[in-house]
Image 1 (cartoon, one colour):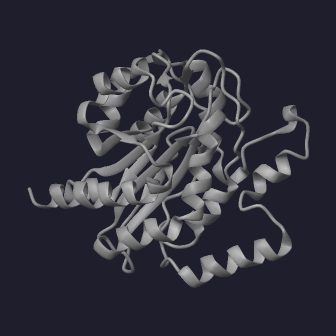
Image 2 (tube, rainbow, N blue to C red):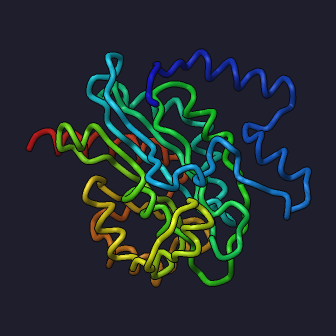
Length: 279
């Protein structure tokens, strides 16, 4: 994946068409909400089940994009966190404009995180894209709004995906780690559970993996950042912020204004990639 170029004209035309037809930007969510909750499902294009048995999401070089840079943006879609994907979709041109000005071969994957203990769509994963297909993936995300009452979501499954099911030419060929953003306001579960991996990815996991171990594996090829919007349900909870600072140190970003999410991601990507290239 990752071919093509982003077109603001195509984005604007699609936005106008939906507005004229009275359609939601998140069409899959709209379709699911017409059904009973037990019928809700991940969009087929975003379902991780096909990643079992060593399947991967790939960010690869091509003649069109000879120096690809992998970017993953994975956000919690439970409760008040549903504001994040809506803001991302509405301001996507700002994200792409800033990134591609400096990194014209950037490839972005969007994904969503829920709670594997109770949600219908605990993990949703797009492809690495350079053109308007990234907007299509973003709009296919099911804004489930679920989550349990444990003050934890399944962020550890996002780290498992990054560690075990991605292949990046920027890292394998040039030693530049991809830049990953997990956006949320709760803690992760302490282990990646084998039964959840089997259910979500369709593969066996002989033993549970501790959160710290899978995060360390992900950090081998990814610069992992956790973004905490401070105006959500738990965004100012010190037990949450302290938890992530203990895990990630200075890779925790506190976001006071959700309208700045695209600028925050874009500027962080450019800074981190340029710093790696300068070494």
